[in-house]
Length: 278
Image 1 (spheres, rainbow, N blue to C red):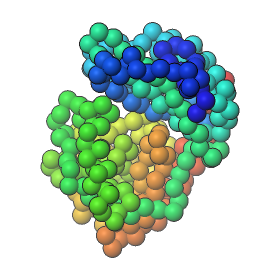
Image 2 (image 1 turned 90 degrees about the horizontal axis):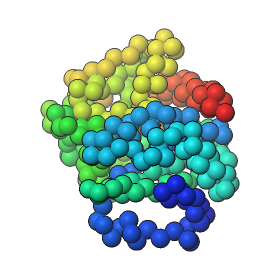
Image 3 (image 1 turned 45 degrees about the horizontal axis):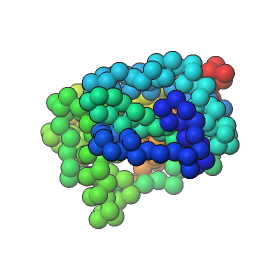
Image 4 (image 1 turned 90 degrees about the vertical axis):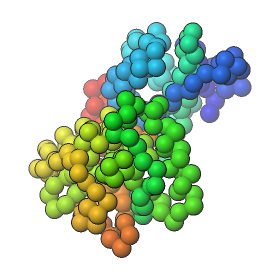
């Protein structure tokens, strides 16, 4: 990457000195947003989440982030200077101490023109690490970061390519920083917020689009691992990894008919939303 956004300035990577940030031993909060179709379609929704989560850590959004028009202008300038004209991720890193909050914005590009999707399929397992549904940080990226790292470490010693995380009641909740969706016939099941499941800006859009496709949506708080064996389709969804279709769990193999329809609708929604942003 050639250019970064550091505390309101676009700088060349070689000119950036992050030592003052790191010497203060700050907590580091990271948040990634997808860009594509010439814009950042879910920027406002993500900033709403950032405002809530930073407030929970005792800080307001930095001044630049409160001026959404100016932030969008600088982010677009950073992408253009890096010549990132397709799709990719913008990552905000906030360095948080008691006294202040500094930030660094980086970006990376994908080769895709559309929102990403994995159509090859992944094999899933069940993580032995569990989340606490009643925790105040149950849906905070900052609060869940340690759990997700533990699950990633587990995966290195297992044959599965992806994993499902349960809560303390052994109820199915989420993937690693990803929303979980399961389809049986013409019904889309997803864990309810009561389970402590991860919820990002993509989750409500997928549920809304599924309804528009005449697929019934059920938010459930009693989905156990054995229910996975009864499903026709399973997929993860997130801004950072896109749509990840699941090929199989144990001896069960899945199709992706409705998954493809939902993905096509989501991709079109993001394209139209970006056009309105220009």
